[in-house]
Image (cartoon, rainbow, N blue to C red; front, side):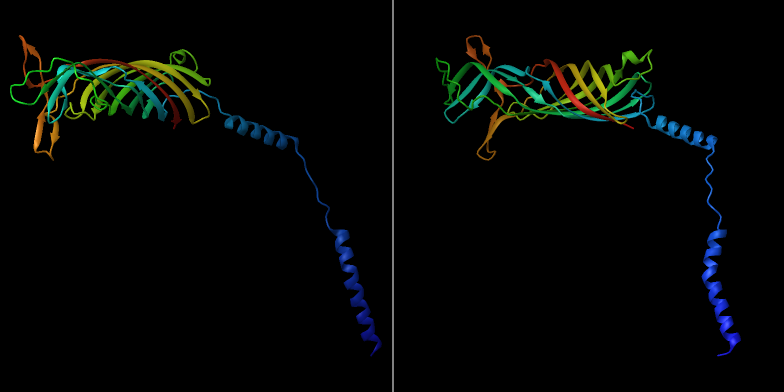
Length: 305
């Protein structure tokens, strides 16, 4: 191996070892520039974003409202009454008396869809349905054998366990209510609690599973009341409400009281008023209308969009 070749190898090795050190010595040191104006701008931006995200509870104009609620309506009032009407029929005798049907406290769920025209006034479309069981009383009872020419018996028959109807009562309604937040008229409408007043009009239907009625009875209901609304967060509210309802209801009499022997024996819906000194027998043509005053309560969840 020649002397020049060995010298070349030694020079190349020296360059290879020393190059990283030279590169490290000549590498520029990192610099950090902290500008006070930039840091201040970033902090202000963060505060602005936090303020924008902070929710202020309030009733807002132009929002849609949808709610679902559960409640009760007290229909414990007379819904149908008729004197000296048939209440029982057997092969041996026909029975009649003063019949009165009364409703009960009914479970009443429903929905609302509304729009806030201002921070204090809204209109709501409302749909409800209620479920209960009605009860019947029969007084001044009379029994007459079915044999031709038989007189009425001289005593009042005992009311059997199943002689008086006790069946299902269903109601439904659709209507429109106006809603006013009185404290928001001159205020800023802010806060979590918002008392309100409401009133409206609805179409209501009563459907009784009864031998006396021919289908559902419709009526027009007027209601007025109020409540309080709690804004839980930006989109969800809790709403408590009480309403007073007023309307009349009048059922259409069924053509037949009972259908026996697979429909081959038809028992007409008859009444037996006293005419002179005897009972007259005739079809029931109509029922008197009944005035209904009822109070309903509801608790619901309401969404704002």
